[in-house]
Every structure is written in C-alpha cells, then in structure tokens.
Amino acid sequence: MVNTTFDTIWRDISPFAVGFDRTFGTLELLANARGKEANYPPYNIRKVTDDQYTIELAVAGFDEKDIDVELSGENLIIKGVRAKEASNGLLHQGLANRDFTKKFVLSDDMVIKGAALSNGMLYIGIERIIPEDKKPRKIKLTSKNKLLG
Image (cartoon, rainbow, N blue to C red; front, side, top):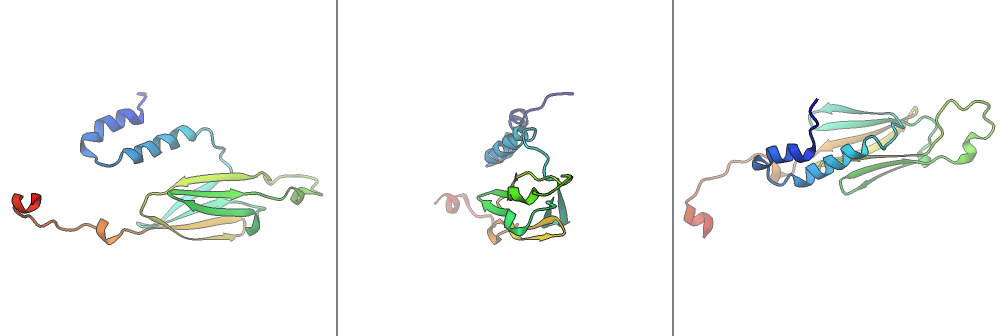
C-alpha cells in the first residue's frame, strides 16, 4: 500500500484548485487527531437529503443539563459532563459514566438547525445553506477593456 499524505495529494491537485489550502490543512489536522480521540460516545452521521444531515450520539444516562452543544466558528463541539454522585449506590456499572468531548468540523455553508435529546440519543440537525452569491450563475462575456478598466 502506498503511503499518501495530504501534502502529496495537495501537490497533485493544487494547479486545479484555488483557495482550498485551509481545507486541506483542516483535513490533515483531523487525520492526525483521529487515533488520539476515543470512540466514545458512539455516533452516526446520517444524510437525510442532499442538503440535510443528522449527527446521532448515544448518550445513555446523560440528561439535558449534562450536555453542552456549541458551535465555535467551523467547529461543532459536544461535551457531556455527569455529576459524580450519579453513580452512587450502583452495584454494577454497565453504562459508561465518563465525561466526553466530541468535535466535528463543518463546512462554511453548514448551519445547525437544532439539537434534541430523546431516549438516550442526542440528535443534531445540520443543513447546508448555499448563499445566493455562491449558487451557480452565468457570467456574461464582455470586452477585455471593460474587464480591466
């Protein structure tokens, strides 16, 4: 198997891509952090439609007061902190009782529509909103003098 790095990929496509250096930098950071982050809590990313997604996290035992969902720039940060006394009196601890922080990087055109906690699952609705100036449009051809003048 060939060891392909983001630098190699970027070098190969950079003549055809303008303004994606930040995107590749973010992807490289995510790839490097992947092994460091625990797979807790387990989660799904569901594509509902072409422009709508749902992140689903299994957070059994957490209440609304224990969970914080924050959007900071392009980062969606989900934190779960349970009170330590919540496990008092348990004879067997089968459900995980550890705090967590889960981070997702969203593209610039993604908007958080809301979050809900139901039956031990946290649902976060995300929608791609394309601004009018980013939608496809026809460019009218003009003379070079008008373009540069």
